[in-house]
Length: 467
Image 1 (cartoon, rainbow, N blue to C red):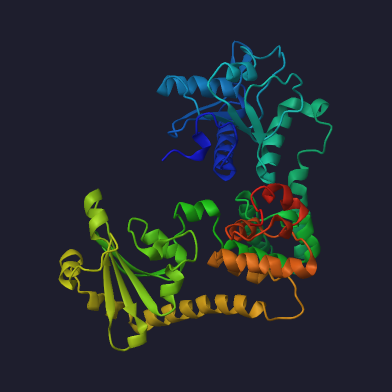
Image 2 (image 1 turned 90 degrees about the vertical axis):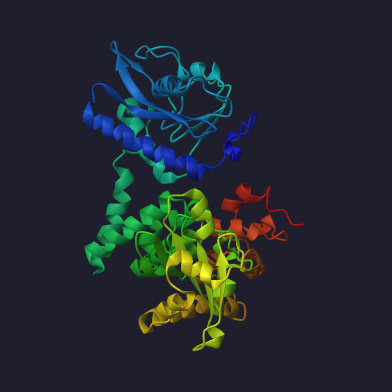
């Protein structure tokens, strides 16, 4: 599948979260090479990414006393590996391409080199304010991730110097965290607990899962430890959009059997259901919306997945199984059996032939006392989420509820998300809601841009049009 990012003649930048992952990798590469040989390697990294996800990588290097820039090296690396760079490719670089005359540079400016190539999109970690000859024939945009931007900016300052950057010292990137940590320690919070929570918070910021004031550690220092810790723990339980789409979130589950041939699990949430069932056609593995998927089944059924470990792709697709144990008949056993193609007509003997156990034996494993207690607890927690959402709309006075907002993000139901936003805005006026909540609400066709705050208005106004 060709991603929208790589459509021919499309010069817009898409998939920023995906591109930010490459920026982080480039920053790590720059640091690694600096440790290896700071005289030979510079402090800018770049890569060329083509529509097939082939990649050429480079950092700034010294050649004959002059610097060959990272974009130039990345394009040369791509040419050596794959040949000519195709249309639709994008260059990702920690520092925007140079465009001025530079005495210590080897070869023409990076802007001239890119102009002469098929590349028409460049995504950078930091815009270089020392370059004053804009003549690019490509789209140039920078990251909106504050932490990645600060890191790329800090690296750039090491060679651009304060002459071109009459701004704060790079050490201030870390000072706010140190000040906040000291304040929490003074309040009697153990430092190990503070460090763990701040690390979780930084991961959330890096994944763009917090927005507005919530991205500012100074703001949280004023809110106090209890609110900060509660927010981080709630947010950390919500995976990023990219993780969900790629079904890389294992979620919570119980493993009933794990041998060389089979893994049999009971998924306890949507993420686990999607993760283990990603090679099957079951509706319960849907990660997109709450539309008849895992949630509808989990209320009254136990799902059990038998996943083949065979390396034979055809066998993989044909021999995964889902058992649906209807708890309404408990302690009697009534179940349905589905193969990977979402077909429920195979006899139970086919399951036994593949797995080596009968479906009833597997169900009894899931019903063992310890497992049943875990499943019942997960089902109760699952139901409490829906109860909180339902009860919220009958509470007075109307106020924002961060826990309900996280619940809505977890359930991913666009109608309820848009209902919540409208409910708050009609009383309190436009708000800066979490981006994931707004994006979810946008899937409801009646959602309007007037429901979000000024920080989000420009981002969503074009798409969130009331119909």
